[in-house]
Image 1 (cartoon, rainbow, N blue to C red):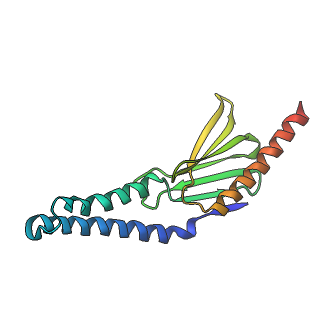
Image 2: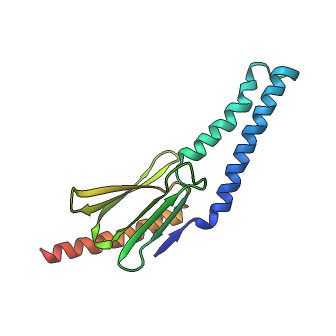
Image 3: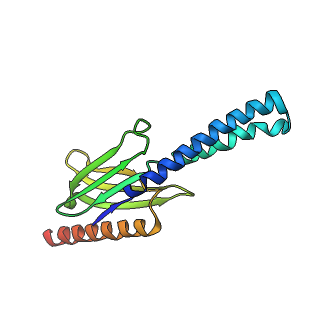
Length: 161
């Protein structure tokens, strides 16, 4: 199964540009308000604070683009930001039989995917991906696919013992 929200890159880019334009416009309006008009009084700091909080919220949600591919004998996860220099993109590929379990953490407005895979050195390794920008249907499809792999792996382990 393949899952990707890469087709929404232009939407995220537009939102990013819009938020930056709001911040620049708010900064300009703040300086005009402070030094020329003085209509708002003490509330003029909100002209900068509100767009800044929206930008912080947008980036705290994590990497916007998530791709998952379970076709073949390997699982492939990719997670990247629309602004390439902000965060290092994640890309992991490993055989399906190494997947031990997964967990989706859904906090207030953030969603994270934790994948536990078997490792020769430490026994198990946890990989973290940010899936906040996936829709409910995409998240449920991802869970369904990962459940299928985990169930198949558990059956193989039981049969091999």
